Length: 301
Image 1: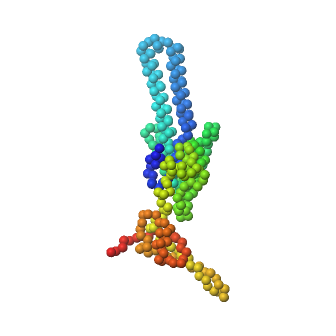
Image 2: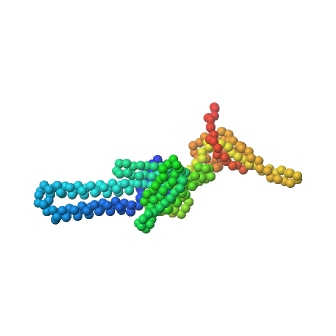
């Protein structure tokens, strides 16, 4: 199965770490209800022939009874089918960028909700009932900011592992927004992903099934060159005060020339930044400061 075709508007560098449907036991109540109606229908039909023999004696009443019995059983089949579609096509997805909740309502209505990882506030999981405890399935509730409704993954297998993966990815997304992390967002725990109810403990397995984007095809940074506005340099000088040598640090802010940093849509690597500023700051320890994007103007010929 190609998981990337199911996720709406997926990017080329976006990996899928959770792709689950509701546990098959969640369909058991609907299946039991359908089988119960079938048993009741068969019991009523058989008992009618013995209790009310006049129905079979009259051809008109016999035909009417047969038509009504057939209609009853024909209604049960689409009832069970719609219930199965409603459960099977509910898909809950967690990628390296967002959460996607696909809810199928009857045959002709589907609702798709998305949430960015950095908007996740808290994640709770719970399992209720004997079967949920024995077969390890339950609900995962994702609390979001006040402007969004909470996300719920109902009756998913291994809810505790899914909650751990979501929290891990959300924490990395928040630190990346704050500029404290530039690494690729991916699970750091023992469980690396869950696809169709199966836990995966290595990224190589996820790459084999097409859920994770290989490292060679992903960009190594998300900071474009146009976002670099200044560089802070620190120089240490030794001065003498009353004959005692004291080290003193001086901070200078260096703004790169527009000729050094061209506007580019490709990610900026640390080596490119150092090369672009090499002519402006020599023999200094550079600290990159992300402030406002530089407005690049085309050079006049």
